[in-house]
Length: 186
Image 1: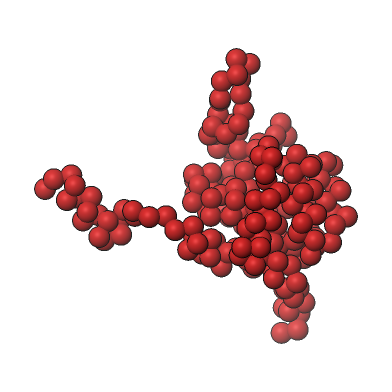
Image 2 (image 1 turned 135 degrees about the vertical axis):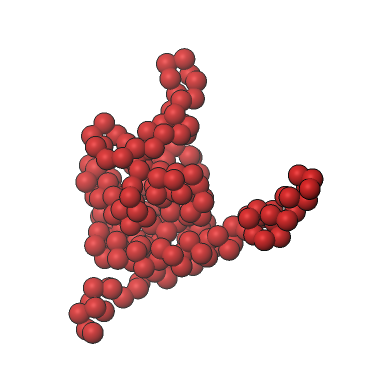
C-alpha cells in the first residue's frame, strides 16, 4: 500500500486531521474549563473571562505542546523559586549571543493544578497586585493591566484577550453565580 493510501486511510478513520477548526476548539476549551475558571474567580477575584481568554490564547485552544505535555495552559515560566516539575521548549529567551534558547516552563500533574497555580502566581507576585483593585467584571482593565504588569511580551496581548472575550462572549461567566453558594443551598 502506498504512503498516500495509508495517509488517506488514517484520515478516514480519524487518526489524521486535515483541518484545525479554531471555532470548534475554542468552544470545546470553554466548555471544558468554564466551571474551573468560575471557581477560581470566586476564590481569587480574577475574572473568569480573563482566565478563559488567557487559557485559549496561551495554550492555542488547549492544543499546544505546553498544554498537552506539561498541562501548562498559561505559559508560566519556572522562575528561580519554582521547585516543581519543569518542561523546556523554545519561546522568547535568548542567550548572550542573541540566539533563541529553550525556556523553562512549569509543568503540572493536571490542568486543574495549572489553573490554581496561575491564580496563585498572580495573587502572590507583587507586580500583579494592582490587578486586584479592578472589579471581577472589568475584563478590559484586567487585560490591559496584565500587559502593563509584564505578563506577556506581545504588544497586542491585551487586545487579543479582549477580542477572545468578546468573540466568545466570555464575560457572561464573570457574572455567574458563586459555585460555593450554590453547593451550600443544596
